[in-house]
Image (cartoon, rainbow over all chains, first blue to last red; front, side, top):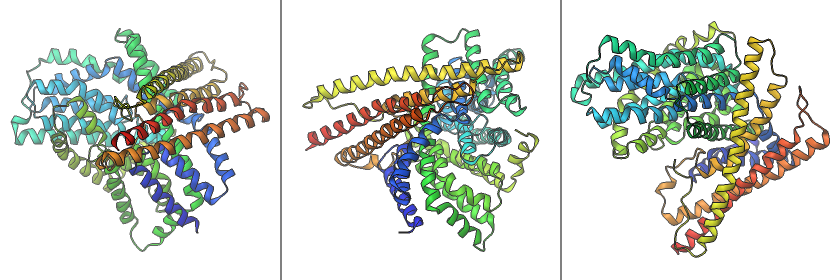
Amino acid sequence: MSPVAVGIIGIGLLVLLFLLRMPVAFAMALVGLVGFASLTTPEAALGLLGRDIFDTFSSYPLTVIPMFILMGTFAYASGISKRLYKTAYAWVGQFRGGLTIATVFACAGFGAICGSSTATAATMGQIALPEMKKYGYDDALATGTVAAAGTLGILIPPSTVLIVYGYLTEVSIGKLFIAGVLPGIIMSIFFAATVALLCWRNPALGPPGAPVSFKEKLRATTGIIETVILFFLAIGGLFLGWFSPTQSGAIGAGGALLIGLARRQLTWQSFFDAGKEALRTSCMVLFIITGAIIFGHFMAVSRIPFVLAEWLGRLPIHPMAVMVVIIFIYFIGGFFMDAMGLIVLTVPIFFPLVKELGFDPIWFGVIIVLVGEMGVITPPVGVNVFVIKGIAPDVPLETIFKGIFPFLVALIIVTIILVTFPQISTVLPSFISY
Amino acid sequence: MRGLYPAPTENVEGCSVLDKFERFNRRLSDWFEWVGLAGLLVIMAITCIDVVGAKFFCWPLLGAIDIVMLVQIVAIAFAASMALILGRHIQVEFLFNLLPRRARAVINSIVMLLGLGLFMVIMWRLSVLGHLLQTAGDYSATIRIPYYPFAYGIALASIPVCLVFLLEFLKSLTKKRVQK
């Protein structure tokens, strides 16, 4: 049997294991191990398994992941998210749909110090949903907004998905981070505009809150100072070349911890809870990367990525048409798999093709993160939707999905804009060297 | 957060043994997680000390990268079993949930057995790697920390993961028997 045929059988087996609910990381490691053994020797595969695990777990570039996740959990435990929401509410709460617009901007702000969409949705959902319920906001609008705006967490730096993409493709993490800034801002504006449009058409969806004086607005603005400091210290330091990504994450985590201590918000219990939460998420991410690396070795010896790149590269169609197909595959894949799982599984297959076709790897990273974002809010595996359902158990899942639909349209429009104008995501990375 | 696998069925013959086994696993995984948490906090502290030392006092911490790399092994490997118990690993759930209970129990037992097999192989290969690193005398580049204890560490941390898979396999069998 040819290596390509073995590779195709391996992919089929992997999909089967996914459908049988085997954890993605373990399924990739198992299929990668067996596939590699069948194409080389069992001794080589077993040797590779041990080495891959040891090397990935001890990889210094990957330390950035636990550090940025820790920064996010310490920021939450320090009460930063609550103060962000208060600030956003003070400025836009008195408008129609103001609380939901405030939620979008608070999610964008929290996304600037937290690299996970699920964490952003869970954090802001706990704060914003009770408020919106109190003011009589429509359930679909309220829950849909939080689930959708939570996705800003993996687009606005720091982003765990972009870190993993950077690690797998050897693209600069600093450049990937800064590439997500403009699309993240545009996405936030589009989300806010979606809320404004919905509430303009039907004012009953989001009644305006009580007016806030200018003095109160200014006072509330102090609530974002620590976020700004933390962002400029950690992410700014990275962009300016002061820190490596790992150092930047550790400084951010240390900074969030100090803020919590200075504000007297952290107890021993919340400190350990935040640490354990970060540890469990980091463990999941590093295991999935390890699985992807083992599976990637199998894919490499099967030569599927190279054969696919060669075949598609020779087709007499425009490279953009191929890219549209790839984006569509990510879009469909997102319905069934979490963004992180989808990216680690597919990047080893598609990335050589993307390079062969001459697309910018940084732009491609931003695009697949955007498309992956759609996956976390669409059925049947919309992780953010389930998180919001957990916070608002009285709201039916159908209502949340209904509320998400306008935001999904906004996401698709922004993706089309970024595909049409790739400069939006490539202009800022051209200014930094790290 | 919902656990990965449902709790053992009450009123099932032999469930008290499974309950004891589950409690033991949970306690063992909890201890291991504390070790992992200590590792994570050490990584943060070492990196911050290194950055502040290097930027403000021109005194970077010697071997900071070596320590961070190796402590990361401890942090991640020792958190694996608790992450598994708490269902933190990404899974594709949509088709599985549509299946009848008995089919789910059968599939679950197969998946648990595959997971158990995978982690037993991981435990074996990391022990072999540890032995190889020990006999070859491999050390870290800057402060010469031996690598082999960390390979053995991953093998050790795989034990509770295997126990979690074994427990879930036994629970699936029990469920199948009850449904019959």
